[in-house]
Image (cartoon, rainbow over all chains, first blue to last red; front, side, top):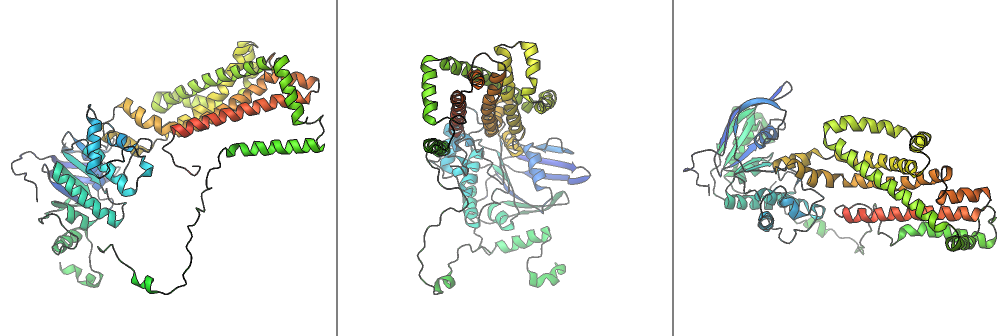
Length: 252
Length: 282
């Protein structure tokens, strides 16, 4: 079910007129975007369309990148990368609580690991984990912060299809329990539809398409309703889905 | 495209000869570690030496027989100056190594962690690196006299350079993705250095450490053969004057054992500290 956010007035993320340039190339060009608390937003776009640039701007990682605009993000922001980015020289629990403050940090780390199904692996080295396990540990690391906003940069891109489906279920569960706002960058249109409350397509440095995905959870890839959303998103991405009807693509 | 599970009845239906499937050995890795394998090579050399001397093919004036060497060592140890010589050599190597180690690490940290440090230190050390430490001996004798301090200084320099070079390279080569991660989890500068930079640079440091340990023995041999009145090198230098090959071999063997043991010690520490690494060797 979609989270009840009506009563919350302030958006979790507010972006107005955001511009980012790399040299002469304008990657983000006056982008506006609001994300409500607890809202799960998927961000699609071609390679080089500025998805990661936007994510890094929100995370405050784009030092020295020229640009302007207004950007408000919550205090507690977590990020999950495409690679698990676990420090190979720290055991899993130490990785999960990296940077976490407070006497209960380790306890929070343990319960986060338990939530992602890695209880008992606290003392393992990152080298010993499979790709899926490592990415679950990375999710646990982001949970420790009790984030108001979770940024995810193609977190499942490097996983095999079966593991990816499991991770989708896990991510959805975690989000429903912890209710962070989520901005998920993905290449995969189906992944966006299955996971998100709202899907954006980035084009020419702005939000080119912004649709709500109004389907009950849990969703399946086999769900027939996925089709119409898929068509809308693919059209916005400029992809003609069916090769045999490619000639008729212009009539849309 | 969403169907990820697919049985393959075609493959199963195809008739084929029932072959015995053996687990294949890992082909590309070097295989299992031989316990104490590193001793095998030296032991083989020893056996060859014994055999050749026993068969009388080795002229004792060129290389004395192993039992002569053992006898000489025993004699030197109980009646001669061998214990003092060994202790003197060990002390020189240890002090020089200690200073070089501390200096190398301190300079590498200063150069690796700050731009000013990098600007001031790195170029200077690269210049120093081009000058062989042993070439500095005459100058150091003039500055520090022909006593202990110049020997220790030369050894320290010989240790300093490899430790600095490798540690600095490792420090400045930290993956920028980890820097990004540290920013996301809001590590402070000190926590970043302690949890990310230093552990990440340890493998490079250990490469430098092993080179440094070997380097300290190398400098020692040269120093003691030219400019000393005690120590193993001095003992060997004296023996050369009297044609006592057995004493020279005793000295060489002790250097060899020291080098081997210190390297093994560093390896042991390295394996403990870098337990997170799984490489071809284990």
